[in-house]
Length: 337
Ligand SMILES: [Mn+2]
Image (cartoon, rainbow, N blue to C red; front, side, top):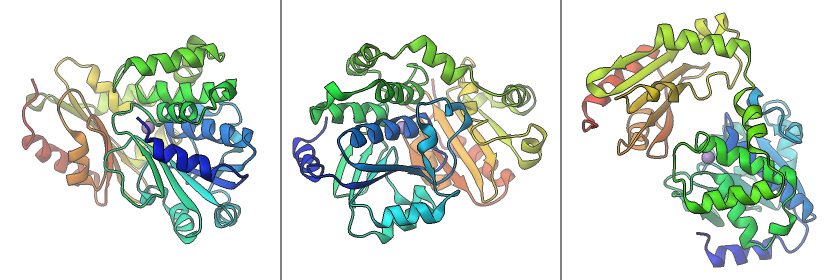
């Protein structure tokens, strides 16, 4: 539910053509990209000058999306991005709520103290330092919130196919193809409207899910066969992927997308962790089913957060330490049924 006052305030800000930056988080996923692309199309159609930026490249499995190649990647063109942010009147932050999730791009945003900052997000614990915050932690995706905002602004008639496609990608991927999260009647009503705008679910599902590289498939097989550890007494499982193994499988960013969910398919496994070695840290992804709160686990042990059933964080230390922290955290959890 979007606050009427906030919608009115936004309407006021958008009454005149503005220079606008849209940003989303590091390692952008389907919802980060989908919600931001849709919002960029809408604002551009309304006569604003808009750029969408991400800190690092978007995953290859989304490359087919309409005009995704117009996305600015800060890592590739830091100066062009910095100049544009500096001249922006408005900065929209989509699908994250802590500027720290933008790495160096966040510093550029912080430098522009003139621009109004507007949040559109569904992650827990939004901070108060936004001029307007559209935050709904019960929403299954930011893309769904963007659609609600489009409706609240009375822009629904102007939703074109690329907007519908982008929102469908976000709604679909953040719910694991409509398998988890808050699957409300409203969500399916929104999807119905996107279908009316030309979205073809089977076709898009092939683009989203049957679009991976051979290397990723082989890596997935290796992970399940050689790397998955099931901790039966804790109803948990985890996998680790180090730099050596990444080299062997010609790892590209996004190749391990969704791996963390795989062990949840095992009967009696309700909590999973995936540990990915990166240049600066061990990236930790956590997933759970039911009442197990991985958001708290991510906050307490890995300087992270997210949602109750899907969260992530970082460990600055060895892979072994990151795993042993997870194993001892399991002992402090209430036993799942
Ligand atoms: Mn999201």
